[in-house]
Image (cartoon, rainbow, N blue to C red; front, side):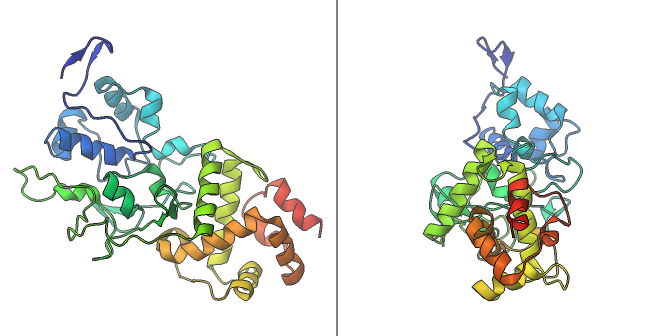
Length: 322
């Protein structure tokens, strides 16, 4: 490791910087590729005792992991923290749960080094321009790439398996095979193929969501994490039929037609199944005139929305006015 006078420390010889909004695991794999070393070997030498692919390392960073990166790179602690999903605290969610479910983050379903759930999204055009994975591609509120204007995907279009890019290096343990992160690790399909353009309203919805996440503030609901908790609550109500708490879904099916329905948590739905609920939720939460219309015409009740948590005042007031 060369010593850098300006930093007064040694850094990894073939250090490469992370890209904008890059997910830690994506940067780490690219870093090990730059050193022509398998990620497991690199971790065993520089991070003894640290688990990488058998846990959700992007969602569970340790102080030990942060310190090794700080000691071995030019990165500051602020930049290091920005690589992890924990950096969304106070923006996407109020409190991060390091040992389980955190609102707004897609689960991976980790079994050893494999993934059961489609918890990592991607943009085919982004991967074509620069093959790396973005932090926002782990979020339940991400459906469109606003840079490329295309819909995100959550699995390989060819074999339908989840995206597990670290398994691209699997094979002969004595041979380092460096493949582009734009390939499917299961069937080597080129994930940059078959991109699908988003509509103008889809782009507008996603752009608004991204802006609220970035600034941490919503005009109607103030703190962004309150906005996203309410957003998730509305999507949950839309996702299931219920005799007691099903008025909103019935109202929206009358307005928009049949909505998807699954016997599993919304977080485990495919992105295509969640997309119609996302679009309707955007209309409800961003257009209070439409919410008022639903309240008056379908007799929506405040209790349906407030049964799981305390509602933002501005949203609750709409019901009290009627």
